[in-house]
Amino acid sequence: MNDKEFDRLLGVKTAGMREWLTQSSHYNRYEATPYRALEALFQEYPLEREDEVVDFGSGKGRLAFYIADRFQAKVIGIEMNGQLYHEALDNKAKFEAKRSRHAGFIQFERCQAEEYAIEPSQNKFYFFNPFSIQIFMTVVRRILQATRNREVDLILYYPTDDYVEFLETRTPFWRVNEVPVPGLYEEDSNERFLIFRHTPFE
Image: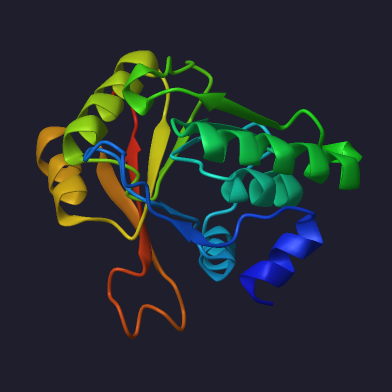
């Protein structure tokens, strides 16, 4: 099933790529994680219903709809671009109309990532290279401050060297898993997920 067919199944429109010519150099273009990559990730890394996921740079909301449909876990999408944010809200309305039993699992907020107030109950944080290393560093520090007494995971898709180096050398996070995307990783070794974990008191 290709991305457009998967979108149709969920009742949303998240496909495509978009450049923002007037956007800050700290924020990257919109590009959704391929569904085949999400399938590979969650085959190896299933979620529980009590998990709370934050998707930084959530765009049109693909990750949120996929997780809500498959795991019935709560997802908060953080998006700074107004057009993408409104497209995500339109998708949310269509998704919940088609899958009413999943209503209430998804929320979108329009703000810059470094200004988002992390909730202590949130325990999974997703990044598909949404912004510069400077902003990533700020966000990770805020995550640690807000969740210092519980285990949290960072999920990186198509991880950049600077993100990985920062986590491995300047934070208490440690790498717990690597999930290559079958059919893509063989051609591009960046087509993978890295999962980093912080467990307090260890």
